[in-house]
Length: 267
Image 1 (cartoon, rainbow, N blue to C red):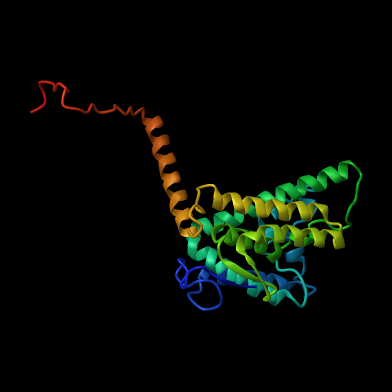
Image 2 (cartoon, rainbow, N blue to C red):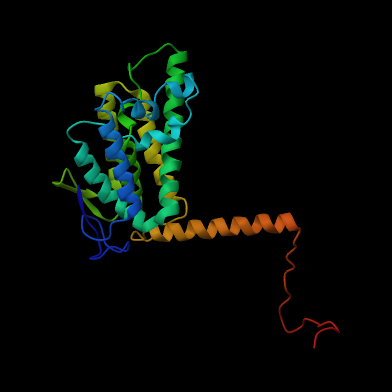
């Protein structure tokens, strides 16, 4: 996938693609995915990704750490490197718009929320004695959930951009939200992984809400950077409100106008 933005130079400081600054956090993320992917091919180390990826043990055996670790476990086959390339292009743009704190918050908010939805669906299917797939969560492991998150965040923040689907078909970036759901549904038809399908849908929705919640799309071209500033402003206001309530401060509105009588203490 490639994109053509409605501006010649993206507001992130480098635009979308392969050229421009390379955030260290994105490189670390890709490196972790590559290392955990490689660990699967050695008998002595394959236990590491097996313990960290999302499985039914999350709710059956209390392996709750899998809710947070599964996005960082590389999966797949020969197309793994292509997945990393596409993830790099989207993740770099998102990082340059959000910076470190909100970049990782986006990942954790969306991936953990998606995992909770998928685990709930898996548990309900088990209670109802319905087994749609012998191996749930297969379509939302590792870089696939990260791709869903990053593409959804990019599509929400840059809805007027043009993305070339499969490097050929030009479509509005905002349409990628629906395209992601369609791809997830096709993957569900092949795997019967209903928990994974609901997990991908939840990740797309949560990523959309994270970007959209502060109105960063009004005007069509506003970037993720504006959303980050709005989030920081909201967070500071909440901290000030909590401090004001804790210390018992009271705000007295000031009087205005020419008829205000000043007290004798006012010079």
